[in-house]
Image (cartoon, rainbow, N blue to C red; front, side):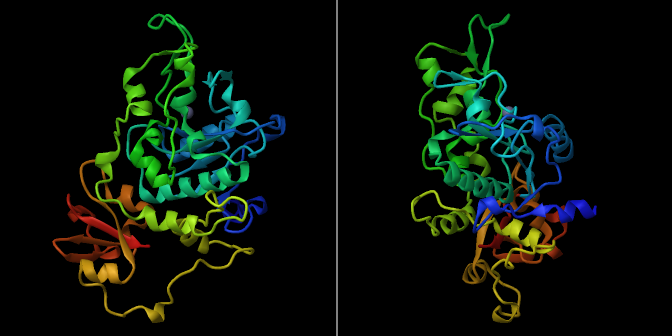
Length: 344
Ligand SMILES: [Zn+2]
């Protein structure tokens, strides 16, 4: 266990405002992987499997550069300047083998299931950091399903887009907004040029037809905005828009419990400055700097909205202006319509 803690490193290459990450699952395949010549895309995947098995698999096989779990932890798998085998049979704008010119990020979750805000914040911070490093524009942050294609088979006579729906949620307007991505790919150059045909019309609607399958899962989400605003508030001199991102607060808090020789403690309101009485109303929460992160509904659990902080003392649940702290809420009584509040 000591290794896990000791290996939580701050990559010096990420510079100031760096994203915290762990080397616990660094791939043994690293030495055999070529150095990548160019980096033009960031490809987002969904593991479609739980964290532990996903981490073991991607590490054993060297299948991605980073893996982000539900609690917002980021694991470095393959060194970011080497080739990871994440995209498989793939094509983008006439070029095959996307692995050769992309960075792959595996996100624990499913392609059509909403991710929690804590995880999305971590993904956003990592993506922003990489965008800044490699000068990758927003529209070049894509889902695996944008670039994967299938060989002709029994059902499809030609090469076709739609081999898999991996990472599909990252193509939706809602999730892209939450990740702070202003632009998206607007059409499939390979389909336009007839190198590929559309093999999955539903996927195509999500990728390019404006079908936002995630909108209903985040009905009142406002929490990511302060985090993203904070990211934008620190422009690098030469890159005014894509700046180095501070670590998401959840990670800062998680990391604060572990040895962190090179990093200052996360900015936190001093306890003495906070009112001693617990917040009594929604207005009170707002006044104290809390933001509504989401509303409990079908498929949107407290864990989804707040991640591992769902039962923390500074997470609050409100319903009909009643305020319940996370460390006092009975999980069985978390009900539909409850709003979840976390500190901005
Ligand atoms: Zn994938």
